Length: 128
Image 1 (cartoon, rainbow, N blue to C red):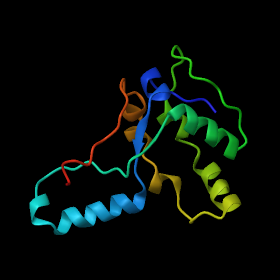
Image 2: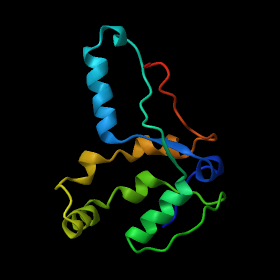
Image 3: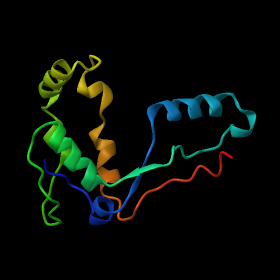
């Protein structure tokens, strides 16, 4: 499994948010007067490195892990554009909720995220 990321992002840590925590914060922000017209980070404090994540995904899906080569050019949008049928097979094989890849993935949004040149960990201080 080959990945395209900046060295800072692959080696450093990135914040992660559980979808349930994110949903709770959206509800809180929608019904709380003090939250009106405000932007908030949402994280439950978990961090990970993309290097670890790619290795784990490689093991789960039984594919070879390939270390980051900064010189390689890689277009995730182009790569994933014809992978909908593969996703359908994964959904079936692992008994996942039946979704279409285009319904749950936006690879255009992933491009700038994986190219951050800094570690990305958010703070929940504003919500407090």
